[in-house]
Image (cartoon, rainbow, N blue to C red; front, side, top):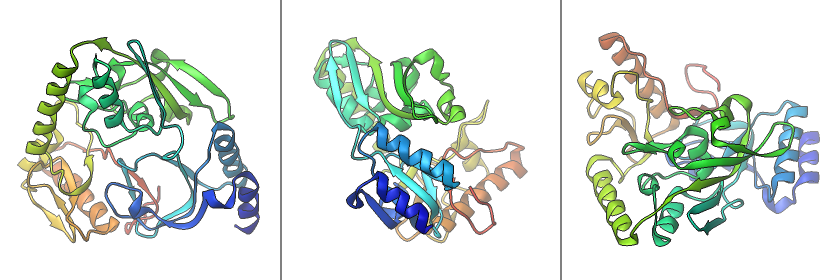
Length: 308
């Protein structure tokens, strides 16, 4: 990796490259071993150059936002984690339109919208992710989703070209998009909202916050909803009906408050979480014939030998 390292240092200054960076401080599960490299490109040019270097050298690379939908193995990630946390975080409100960088937190964007008297983003006020991740996965909650407010997104193609894609070309569906299939990177998004009373918007946000506190295990580290909703079912209901309410492996547990959440009770390993998720999938499949698909992305090698 020495030649790769030298080439990487030609693209980015040393202060924006870290070697052996622990991923437990960069994921909301609060687990994960070290990434070989953790880099912070400052602009699209640097980002494109790092991705191209990884492609040429056959080194895996992943884009990291807030780490709210990610499970990194205890052994870590043998590749380059490209962090967009510090860049692309600007939020601009113009009329009924909001332009936000990929690194802007959804909660922050929703607060800006509320202050500007713009409604439509209340559902996102409690989602602990970035705009970039929300666009990629078409994040949604409480009956709404990103697709309802997006007009387009600025993306970086695998060839290093910046493009503004209208929402219809993003092909947003339930936790999917053309961004994933085409290996695009989201750099920013444009949202069109509707004028409303700021106090009424704030009240709605408070109501949703109270619902989250009541129904979700926010006091524990997690990645939010762990499994995708199977067609015709609710993942949490299936898990509860399978008798897995409170089921625990090591420090990982099926939340007693909401069975759709797998939580870190404080000392879980990534392997604990992985093994628990696999046990949940097996039990639900055996009892109900339904295959639960993980919403959380796996990175690294886990005990079963599965590598992602």
